[in-house]
Length: 127
Image (cartoon, rainbow, N blue to C red; front, side, top):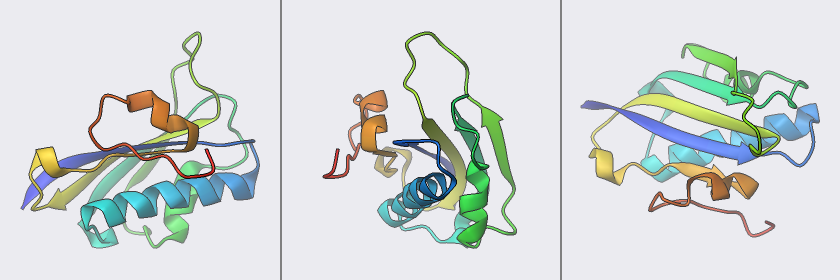
């Protein structure tokens, strides 16, 4: 079993608590589904949020999904000129048998434009 990193990002339409929880849960669940992961496979998760998101801690959405024993950390994303607004990013460290090349990183909604260089990015139909 190897330790791998799984990346994800999602963009919110507005800084509304329930919307934040929904979008972050969607990102986490999609990452789990795409990589065949269970909560017990997670070692730790780092979430970052842009400075315009203050309605809730992104990690709280993971806690609601059963990540109570997984170390979670929230941090502020760098404020870079022309950066995309209302974005939550995730860097998860997991145990998996998947080769690094087969890890699927999940970029949802407007955040799909952040990493168009990845072979597997996903945008939802309502974008």
